[in-house]
View 1 (cartoon, helix red, strand yellow):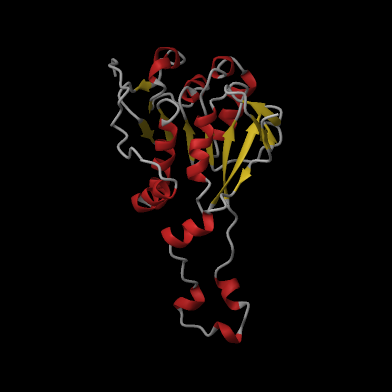
View 2: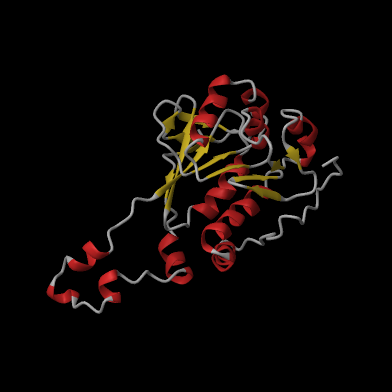
Length: 251
């Protein structure tokens, strides 16, 4: 049985990435020129450890595998974030490609996420009609710093009313269906990904990896995003307006 176990991810390469991409912050004690050797606990008290922020990825039957694991590869290297998977009932969820992924939380047990992401896939055709899914997205969105989607995941966000009044995009092959989920969204037919306020939506499948790096750029700057792509030997399309699959739309 194909199975990806217990995905609450910290990429094993995070330490190497952190060493090359970011310099460690100077503690208050060091800045003040304090002799911390005389007080071993001084540095710890001056620079207390911060609780990692959480990226919550919402899975459902029939999600698109790369929509999830492209962003996971990029976000799993961030030093200040951990990634967890959530689904309606918790436990394993099967992707459109037949891959089972374990989710740590159910909708009922999930904590508040700092960053929320919903992928696309054939299963979104069902999820736009799933009242529990829509209610969960609305509830989480109230407390997120960023709410994101890949591919037709934007259709589900739109159906939940979260993209009302915002620009957004989706998979161009499924654009007509996705955009039909809400007439209150300024759907962009020419965009690899779109950032509008705290909402980031991307075009189809592989565009999610470009979008994920776009969020890394927002959080840490362009240099760190480029280094993240380089570590994975990924050619990042860093221009959200460069869309080889663009469509002409009324917006």
